[in-house]
Length: 322
Image (cartoon, rainbow, N blue to C red; front, side, top):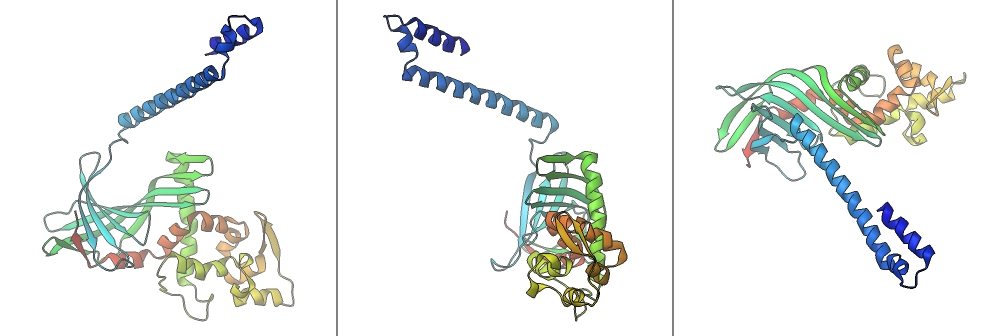
């Protein structure tokens, strides 16, 4: 390609009467050369894609899990749908996957049921996105469930006992242009979960944030959860009419409140001391609580609502649709 362009320039400077230089440098030829450049670029891109796909085949990621059967709960379009899939995994084993349409990115994995219909719940697979990326992880579980035939082509799903969350065993993180996998992702995911568990434990046990007790409070969805808790956790970021009484009282007190700046936000540290237990003071004042809220709100909601989520799955009738 470079030789052709050099030849065109040489012939143009020669200015031959035969018009060879003029014909080679004509608009038609320039368009032809440009088309060759574009075609060459596409060829390189195709080769790159082929190499990438070959790598996926070698590592096994190109082979998707196969869905053997699908069962789904009945109800209106607006009602959340519980879905159970029988899967054949990449290693040839079979498993069950349980999802809830009200919880995008949420999937429980369990063993293939035994002769009596009982099976073990082994793993939560969770994926949630935010403005700057996403969190993805597998959380090991300890719990049991059962399936029984309730009618023709239908099953009854029962999860009567508590399902214990153990530990994150693997995961991935995408934050802006950075992507973490393996051990590099596992440590920050586990650290974030520790912070989330400390927060949700306080949320579920606290009785001072409202005139009514919050013990065992159930939120219908993530949006309701966010609408309630954001003004309490971050009154500095909401309008005055949404701020809790404790924050307004803190501003109106005789002694001026203590302020501190973190991540370009001015935090009312006096309010932090009034509302939060001491172990959460630095969590809020440093801006780490806000980062977790912005990057992992669905995750926080899942951890807070775990027992309720499991209860909604119990005694669910599922109709076979595939």
